[in-house]
Image (cartoon, rainbow, N blue to C red; front, top):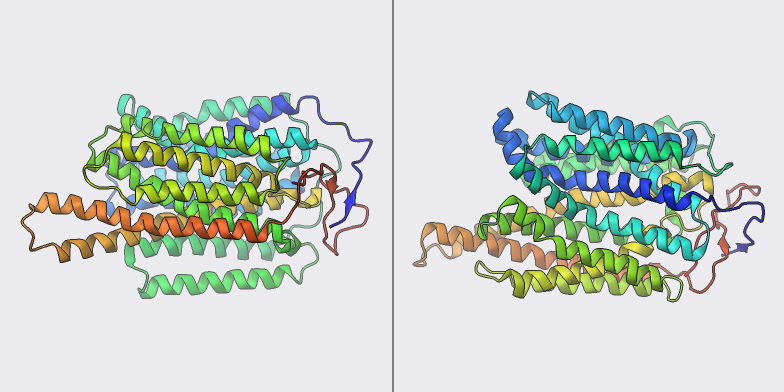
Length: 507
């Protein structure tokens, strides 16, 4: 990999740390919105008369729009300007949240969730790519991405806490209204503080076939996994959706290899370090989202925790993520290779997940769940930090938005896969347990609870294996060294010779 000296004429933006505050607020809003509605859903379902068959769409509508439009959002950020896209995303997200908060029908609520996902697809990649082009010093970059990584990793748990508080003490509608002050603060800060470096846009024509194929292909893939959860993995409709998604995404790759100005330049995902980041991060999110789901239900249904107590029960994980990201990942990022942070980080999280496989109906929160959460948080925080920083490793400034979108895409698709895959495994294990223990002397309710917890433990075993695989990929794919803060130019053969590479920390 070639190295060039940093451009001497480029001075860091003096307001970059203030800008980080507002970018972090926006990122927190987007991430927590993926989980804040989960706890409020039962109340919203009762209030609006949403059927059991349609309630999943409150979650799925957001995931479909978000996952399907992320690459398009990343490309728009590169083309239109990251700051402008960031502000538009914030305003649109706030408007969609207000619409959800005043929803008077199922259709209105689902439409609001889809709009939230669409504007989130503009907001998320523009936020990450702004960091990529604003923080160019190695040590500063490590700190900035440490904060960003902690928020990205812990935002889901924050959503559970906030959702519990708002639902229990106010109203489910406030899980939507709460986004408005977040968005207003971030948008005001963006207008006053954020200044995007000049000369980093990609003004190539928009790849319309790529937009259509990627959006429909990713949306179909997310929907296929969601459909598998409710209709089974072997049903004709589920298999048909998976085949359609494979065809659409294969067609997308073919088109991108042929067009002059692709939506996703294949050089972005062909570089082994970035490929390792996207793949390992996506796998880790699969495991984490499943764990969030199971622990939420376990604490509320089995342990009879209130929504607020359930949210507070996740605080140790949030603390672990913040500590792992800012105190371990950020401090060691310039001293050790990235794979020695990500690989052990995923393994540490895997040990915490392994502890949760021992969960039983009478398990103690303090003795089992608390230490498991601390390990999960420390491990994921340590791994997330370099992952976020390396997401734009070696890319040209014009590709920063789409490279950032790939991180969010791996997270969003990973979350959808994790929820569907692990929930299906848990349901199958629960059914099998009931069938094999039907002749026991346990009462029907006791047997049902034992079967449900057994299903959770079985699915968590799969999550352990998935985290082990994520660790192996991080150790194998990520090869960048450490102790070098020079700018890394892209190896892409088709990159323009006069492009200025993004200063990226080499570990």
